[in-house]
Length: 278
Image 1 (cartoon, rainbow, N blue to C red):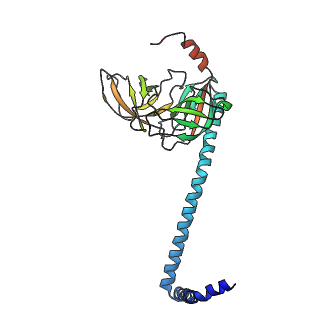
Image 2: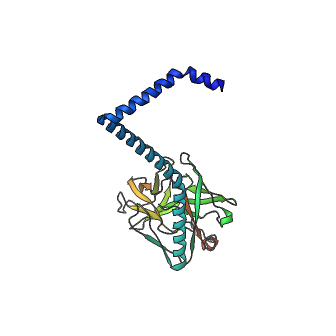
Image 3: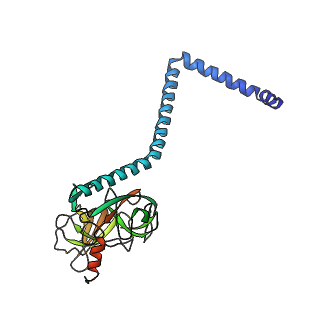
């Protein structure tokens, strides 16, 4: 108590000054209309600013939960379509309209959350929180609501690693939507937003903005899944174009994916193992 008393006495003049300053300001704002209006406006702006910041922070923390909910909802709807019809229709933002691929209960979708991602390396990888306990296996296609992401490489009980399109080892059969000319999609290791499409003959009419989709000529990726759009092209070596494709998927911000299980993949691969396509 003595210490508190000494502290009060020691700071008596400071406390008295603050008290008188507060009384003076109150009198100014109460009896001077201009200052009163200024104070109310300032106070209102401060309150609105704080409310906006609080709302932004709250939205940020709930965004992850909302993204996960929407991803699970997409998976549920796709699986319902898979059970009820022979054609699964997929609709993507940045894509002109819906596309479909033959199903006959051939595919199922399972949601996964990204827990680790790299974009600045030559051989990037993604880790997703879904694994063998969820019937995930190597060589399954991985997509998002925007387009294809990559394919599963290795699995553990609860996690899987994914080789994304922005990995120098990635090779995907792709075609130009509209004329069905197909080639090989790969990444040159430069820009994580741009991949390259090769083996398209120069006599094929193409233009900037043409949509690139999966060719379906593999047991991994279903036909007509969106990949991106032609950003630019030029004649390369031989009689083929050099084509840059801007990806639909933004690997800098992606958080949730879907893994596609192709129930006929094993049968197709076993048959193709008996034949050489070289």
